[in-house]
Image (cartoon, rainbow over all chains, first blue to last red; front, side):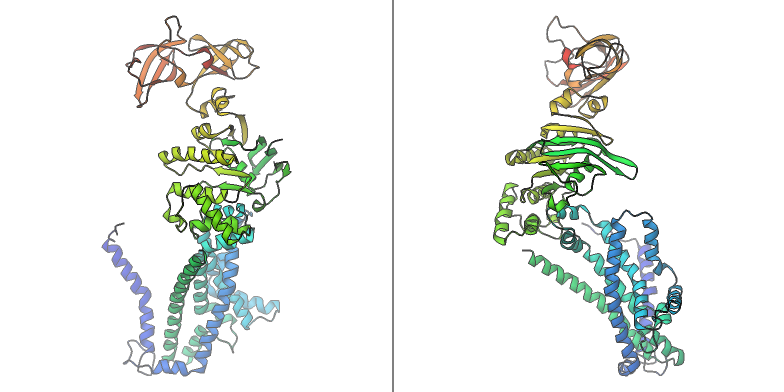
Length: 270
Length: 355
């Protein structure tokens, strides 16, 4: 197969697009490495003092690990719910399926502020004791992350040939075994992509967290925001460096895990 | 009692019936084809037998047992799909072993049976290949091996040749038939290709719009089609409008293209004066008499000629009606230029009057 040359205007557009998306990240990273007292760009000399300050800050570290745990918990539930919902949307003949799909996806379409406020109000008025608790926050994050899983798993199912599962059934597999042994391995890429999305979305979530997080358990974006409201110090940018690193690492790690698992699966099969 | 029986089976999707009042019996060991254009209900019928969809009304029986509500995994029916449905995440060995694993066979038995199945389909040594490394014909062999290895009661084939190129299709046609014949497995074959159905089947059910129009051997279907639809769908046909001039029992005469020609009657109830379609197959017509005293059935002019290698194909204009005539391409047979006057001859029993 020969590679076709990309026309230069498209190439230029792509470069501009990438620059637009990546520049803010460079700004944050450089600002976090400043030697000065204040959050400025360009930085006043380079040093690791604010990175060290982040690592010594009880507030930031606990927020970082709280966000990490919250994102993991959200990822698990969103992956299960999102996969189930995508399967239902792909396979049932229920009337009003299009409306149902739109409903499931609505949390990402609606402004985060609206979703956050609606949940906040609901938690308060329903009297379930969920407002400003970890559980309420978790529910909010699940609501916000699940559509990404529905999207990626839905795309995987659209490309999946249903006759594979039918073949497995007619060869003697029960519905569950046919799903687990044939369908699941063939849509696993979509599920994994969806769970990475869910993790990243939850980790970076701000608007919903703003309404739902408890004062003693702040996710990292809320901690950064609160800190920047009172002092414009570069430790927030240093926290940003760690957040960016974690997201990149999670993507790379998952890629690696996927390959390893495929490798194992192939060897077991023989 | 038939081996497989559909009793009054109807399937509706929404309001439109896909299959209507299907009553078909299939004998043990028979190669039975469901033939029809797309949307005729043949695939729906197959999928009901496989257990992927349930009939709206009616019941399906195998060996006298009602299997209408049995899930697919309990039916012991093997199916080969149009796209073969080879599991892409498993190699050939694991694909073929799948049904045996589900049946809880031990590793040694599985190895032996899969090896035998691979040999049967001529793919020994392909154990470790994946779907993407197989040609269309090889995929089909794997799909068939995967099904045959579990020794099902019934083999279902859903348009298994339609994804192959022409040469491979011819080869697989005979190969499938010979495998089927050697194991003697009851086989139901779904196709829209009349030549596949004619070549391979013991019996054919011609379907259209959810109904079975005719069931019979390939010879019966081709030579005694019961309706114009079947006559046109199976093979090439000349269907000319005519009027029944004489009817006595199973034979009669039809007024067609300004002449009166003898014809068998497709329906016994046809009466004199009825509007009919006169069917004569292109390969039945000769442009030269077999003996000096043979009288022509029709006369006309050559409209055009198409060279087809083994055949010459003439379009003949006979009193305003167009007929296609196929003549073997042999030097002793006359070649006629467009505009030439011709006489058309055929055996009296070759013509069929259809209601």
